[in-house]
Length: 392
Ligand code: PMP
Ligand code: GLN
Image (tube, rainbow, N blue to C red; front, top):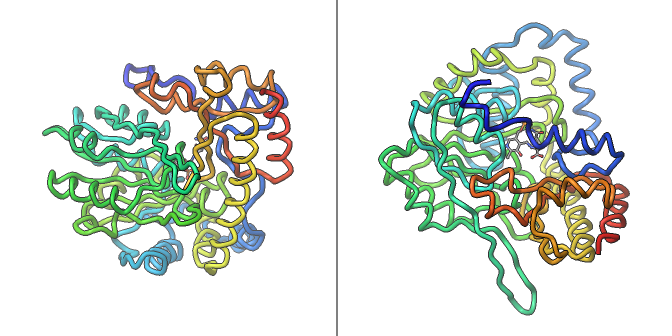
């Protein structure tokens, strides 16, 4: 293994899912739903397969039906207009989109500013591209309104500005944010946009949880902000939006020269993404708004169930405004090392979770935080809560 990759080892998701299997634990670690997405979309994939659509190499940029569906979705949801021929690229999941974007846009030595904690593939892909990651840490913040405690991980805009140097090439943003559940506010996004314009930076924005925002939170695509349409690479995922994580269909929307750059890298990674599933995802993106509302409402109820249970079990809970993850602080349980806690949790309680420290360069800043996924059936979450309550 070369020096660029040596520090990364095995991804925490593989490690923790294997631990869940070998110990028979409830897996609230890796973020995948335990219920598949809509039956009609599964049927659409079967139909495509049977009708021979996509069984041979589809076109490099993605099948036209899917590219058109992606642009229609961006138009309908956000008022963003993209040309399906030049401004869309279908990828093998958002994971490939992230890799291809970084491989295409970075020169060796370029600095990439990423919000810490960051999704684990960011660090590995920056390294593979020969870039240098510069983490800006989201800080836990707590305030009380009308007797109710609100907790969230917050972006310090001064820290962000101070992180930019003459070597900064791009900002790698993620909202709604995995693992903290933070949804960046208009104020935070505006500051990011102003900085990008002022310092002439590109922005890669991972918006795979765009449809998982709760309560008063709003998902604001960075590309909608002034000055951003031409310098932003936006990433989406059918795995996350339609609960088919095994299909590995993702996409990029951006200006033509940026899409062309990302395509240059993508063609030598996978050449194309899986054919029949692209046709099914095209149908999924055209589902009525009621699908997205029901999906969000279901996850919100699950968030509330698991969040209340974790609080009763003694965790300090950062109620997420988005995603299907809850970050907790384990210090009220008398614990301080999330790694040790997560390695022992299957034995102690029959539950698997993810130590947030793996998503940090400043490991000590992430040490007491542990992430639980709530994209699971209600009965599974109830059983997990019952088990976690034995910890106290
Ligand atoms: N970005 C983030 C923030 C994610 O959480 C994930 C999935 N866990 C991905 C990208 C990858 O998405 P996909 O499965 O479409 O490759
Ligand atoms: N995105 C999912 C998570 O954060 C898992 C993806 C993966 O296994 N690489 O849990």
